Length: 489
Image (cartoon, rainbow, N blue to C red; front, side, top):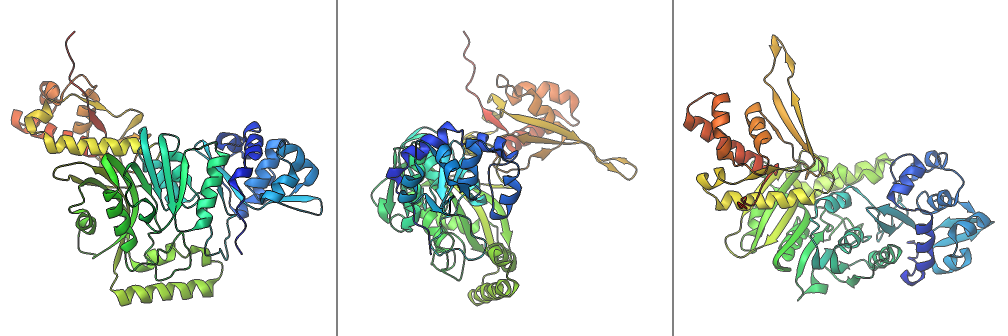
């Protein structure tokens, strides 16, 4: 049976206790001597790292799910009393011990409330905490200051809480009432009063609304089952992703942005972006399509049934069931990725990129650079492109490498690694690196042609073509960005 979600109205005193004892991502990381996340199997190890101060008691309760002596919990939780918190549904008290019924995970300046992680038999309406998909969407979502934002399929509310830090008003929607209750609770624990929760399927709760920013991690898994609300959308094939993507495009205000996580079906011999382009034809949005992986049915089914690994017979039966459904439906390949949309009048601009890894840092800034690069490449001819002042993206490092091979060394390769990266891999030769070093925001590629002409082989036209190709490569990877022309003083 699902645990009761505590009332958000009772969260104030607990928030005060958590804040006073530095129960945040940094504070918990210090207390644990490592990452501020935990799974049930980690608790015995983490517990041995903790001290016996009040912060440690809160970590034991709300992160590790361990018992704490009632008298000790009373002191750590003040001004929130144990009896009041138990009555509100935060705690259970028995035999002189206190145990939390929920988990509270600190992340990026907010406190996320959710169900305890269940490895074996989660309930159908379980509300999960942080996972790889939630982290991916949080990293990739651009963070401009906006008036209105939407978190479609909010789950535990992590995207809504993060949006609420830079949006005037946030609407969070979900079909799972427990998810909405946890979202409201997380907002209260995080001190946020600009999150509105609405129940309903897909865009029904916001039918006539338009938003400046949308983030969506829908139940996109292409599943033959309807076991978990957070995973199984209950629609055939990849309809969940199609509806989420097309609905996001429809509900964006002019100039608005959306980031949507998707799964989609494709034929093994067709380009991975072909189905997405079909969905977005006529949607009135530019699209940056970030492809993470394409998997065969067995790889995909295994990934989404890992919770059964500890019971091999059930695990095998689930895989057989999923594979049979895929075979019957003619499903041969399944794509995974993230799609950035931008509402703009005129002919839509579609661009694609491969995510070699997961995103890092505030990858939404990289997404915005990639969208701006698509504009520049679409609007500028060769002469204009060469005459545009460009600057290298901030917060990066350049790694030069020559691999030892039989008979000597391979040609030098150069990698540029961004701190805020949408997961793209940027590797190129020394000629592109030479151009990269010269782009300081005041100079144009044309300014560098004489210097590069002396360093590179070939005619003047060959060098110009090589530089032009390099500029397009650097822009396409989001490694450089256009700068306004310098105005003489």
